[in-house]
Structures are given as structure tokens and as C-alpha cells.
Image 1 (cartoon, helix red, strand yellow):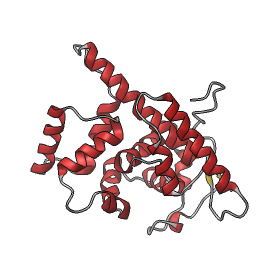
Image 2 (cartoon, rainbow, N blue to C red):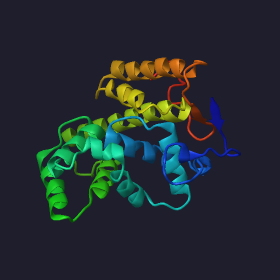
Image 3 (tube, rainbow, N blue to C red):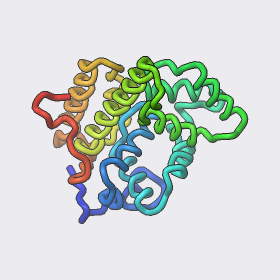
Length: 235
């Protein structure tokens, strides 16, 4: 098990083609790391793998913009497998809404964004960033109570998934993408029991990965993000 602090560098070329070390991420704050975790949620509906998270975090620290990062996510094998070439913009947008918000999108919003994508006015990467921004924004002053309640539910859902992603990749330092997907899939909107089930699944996977004969690399990041499940009462 390797615990990464600001004094250490890890070769991310173990998984990614570009030679780079992961040490740049140690200079970022938790809010910035949360943003990268949200990209994994939006694109793949899973927790980040630790190596991938640290690679992209270091790329950001070294000057890669968030817009560029969102675009580069599109050019990944996992993205192509998740969204085949015959997947329409409607398919893509509907899946992203489900990943980020855990609900069916409102028809007007869906129609708007699909129209913008079809016209080429926005890229898929830009669309994802706008959905994430919208999920975290405060409701307008003239919003109805129904809209406010929906918006708060969206915020809570994304925050919960981000905490699960943090726990898996930053606190536990795991990089098995199948485990990352399985844990995230357990969490359901407005269901605290399912959130605990996701955390429990991460703990089980970590115990197996930490076994001496597992052969799995654990890469924990120290001193950047707090353990979201340290509270006595649990998640």
C-alpha cells in the first residue's frame, strides 16, 4: 500500500499513455478534487480509479483546463465502450442526467440540450460540465417550492455520490474499475440505506485488495480530502 503525500511522486504511466507523475494532485484542494470525481460520475456512473483520478488531478495542476479535461474524457476507451458510435445525443444526455441527478430529466431541459448538441452548439464535454454546474447551483429567487425541493434533491444526490467516490479512490486508494462501478451502482436517490450499502461494499473490496496476496496496488492520498464517513453516526 502506498500513501501519497506532497513529498512523493507516483508514475501514472502504469495506466495512461502520457508519461507523468501523480504528485501534482497533492497541491489541489478538496473542492477541485470533487470536480474530477464528478466527471467520473457523469461519464461512467462510477467512483474514480485512484490512478486515473491522480493522473487527471495532476494534469489540472499542471495547466490542463477543466474544459479540456472534459473533452479528453471523450477520447477514452471506457467512454467509447459506454457510449457506442450509434448512441444518439438523446441517449447520451439521458444517461448523463441519470448518472448526475438519479432521475428522469425534465423534458424542456432535455429537449434544449439535445437540440444544442444536435446543432453542434455545444460539445458533449461542455454539456456534462453545464449539467454538473446546474446540479450544484442554488435555485433562483422566484423558484417554486417544488423546484427548490427538486434542486435540493439533485444537490444531495450528487454530493452523496461524490462522497462515495472520494471514499473509494482517495481514502481507500483503490483502482479496480469493476469494484468502482459496483459500489456506485448500489446507491439510490433518497435512500440512506443504499448509501451505507455502497460504503460497506467499498470496505469489503478494500479488505480484499489489502490482503498480502491480492496483487492490487493501493494508492491513498493523504492530507487533501477528509474521510466523508469518519462521523460516528456513519453516512
